[in-house]
Image (cartoon, rainbow, N blue to C red):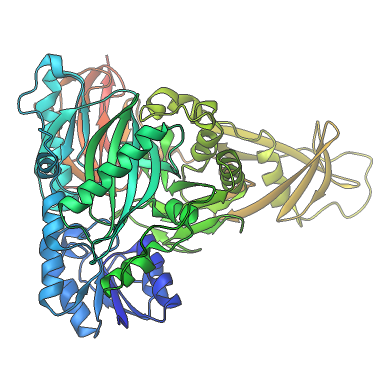
Amino acid sequence: MITSVLVANRGEIACRVVRTCRAAGIRTVAVHSDADANALHTRVADTAVRLPGSAPADTYLRGDLIVKAALAAGTDAVHPGYGFLSENAGFARAVQDAGLVWIGPPPEAIEAMASKTRAKELLGIEPLREVTEADLPVLVKAAAGGGGRGMRVVRHLEDLDAELAAARAEAVGAFGDGEVFVEPYVEGGRHVEVQVLADTHGTVWALGTRDCSLQRRHQKVIEEAPAPGLSAALDEEVRALAVRAARAVQYVGAGTVEFLVAGDRAHFLEMNTRLQVEHPVTEAVFGIDLVAEQIRVAEGHALAEGPPRPRGHAVEARLYAEDPARDWAPQTGRLQRLAVPDAVRLDTGYTDGDDIGVHYDPMLAKVVAHAPTRGEAIRKLAAALDRAVIHGPVTNRDLLVRSLRHPEFTAARMDTGFYDRHLPGLTEPAPDPHAPLAAALADAHGRSRFGGWRNVPSQPQTKRYLMAGEEHEARYRHGREGLEADGVRVVHADARRVILDVDGERRTYEVARHGDQVYVNTTALTALPRFPDPTTQHAPGSLLAPMPGTVVRIAENVTEGTPVEAGQPLLWLEAMKMQHKITAPVTGTLSTLRVVTGQQVEPGMLLAIVQPA
C-alpha cells in the first residue's frame, strides 16, 4: 500500500493530486522552485521541498533533484501530474531505480509514445519528409511534450524555415527536446480524444470521448465530454483505436489518445502518456476519481471488467491570466480575489493574495459544470463564470462566457478554427456604461458634506477612470438627500455597494478597490489621477513591452535606421512558456532599439520606436 506520495509538479494539478491523496489518507510532499516558495500547492501538502532556482529547467525539469527530494522526505511513490517530466521515460526509470513507486505508465510505453513521430510510425502513419506548395497548409509540431507549445501553422513555404526555428526554440525551453516534425494541417477539423485507463492485469477501459476543439495557439480552452455530434460508428472507431494504441505498448495507468476529426474520418494525432488537464469532465460524466484510480493501479489492483456507466454531460473552461484581445498576452500581478459559485467545480493553484509570476503557464483555474444534458451544462458553466468574482490581472473570463454562449458552440458546430473566425467579435469591449459612476459614488461615500442647508446647489464633482482602454469621466453632486447624478436616481451608495435606478430599472453594483484598480461587478477600471503625469507620455510609434519576459530573438538585419513595414516582426519575447511576436506598428524607420537578446523586460518598458514614414 502507498502511504506517502511526492507530487512532481506545481499549481493546480499538484493541488488536485494532494486533494485525492488526503481523502485516501496518503501523506503528501510538494516540491517548489524559489518563485513558488509560498505557492498554494506548497501550503496544502503535508510538507514541501525546495528546488533551488526559478526557471523550469533548473527546478521542475530536474529529475535528479526531485528523486533526491522524494528519498529525503521518505515517500513511497511519485505522481508526475502533467507537463514537466510527466512523459519523461528517463525520469520514470530514475524513480523506479530509487525503489519508489511510479504512478504512471511503464517507461517503455512512454518511450514508444513520447515522440509523436515514433508513435505515428508505430501505428503505420508517416510524417511529411519534404514540404511542397501542394502540401500547404502544414503544421510544425514538437515531437515531445504538448500543451500547444512548439506548434506552428505554416501557410506560405517561405515561412517554413523561420517557423521550424521558432518551434525548436520553444520546444527546447518547454521540454528540453528540440525535435520537431511536419504533418498536414486539416482545416475545419475537430479535436476529439479518448480517455483510457489500463491496469497490470490486461484490462483497458475507454472512458468515452471528449471534444477539445476550442483552442488558442493549439492549446485547449474549452473541453467537454462526451464529444457531441459523433456518429455511433465514428464514436466506436475512435474508442477502438484508443484501446488498440494502449494495448500496442502494454499501457498501464491513465492516458489519452487524440484525434483530428474531419467529416466522418478520424486522423490519429498522438497518445499522451499522462493525465490530461481536461480529465475532470470525464470524471464528472463517469463518476470516478482518475487520480485515485491511478494510485490503485500503481498498487497493483485490478480494474473492473468494464467502466462505470456514463451519465449526463460536462463542460470545462480554462481560466487564464491573459488578454485575448492583445494576441493572448499573458498577464502577471497579484490575484486579489477569486471566487466562483458553489454549483460548479473549481480546480485551481491560486488563492486570494497570491502572485502570478512570469515563469510558468498563465492558467489560473479550471471551472467545470456537470448536468443531465449538454445545453444545461453549458448554461450552468456560462452563468457561473459570468457571476465569478475575479480581481487582479486581466483574464479571459469574458471570452469564455461569450464562447459558451456563441450559437456555433451551443449548436456543436465548432472546430479548431473557432477563434480564428470569431476572436474579434468575442473580444469586443462591452463594459457597463454606468460602472464609472458607480465607482465614483462608492469612492465619494463618507466624504464630508455641506454643514447646513443652502439655496445654491453644489458644483458637480468629477472622477476619471480608464475602462476597456478608454477614458471615462463620472460626474455627481452632494445634494440634500445624498449623492445625485444626472440621468439616474441614486437609490443607495456606500463604499461597497451602489444601487441605481436607470429608466425605472433597479441595478445593483458591487464595488471593490485594490489601490488604483476598481472592480464594479465584472467590469475592471483604473482610477486616473486628476492631473496626468507628463513623464509617462511616449513618442508616436513606441513599442512597449506588453508583459514581463525575456527577449529571445531580434529579427535578422534589423538595426536602428532600418526601414520597416507595418506588421513586420521585429523581436520576440518569451513569457510564461510562450513566445510572443512584437511587430512594427506602422511603416517607417526603426529609429530606436532599446533591447538586446537575453534581456529581461518589465511591462510598459520601451523596446523600440518606429518613426512613421
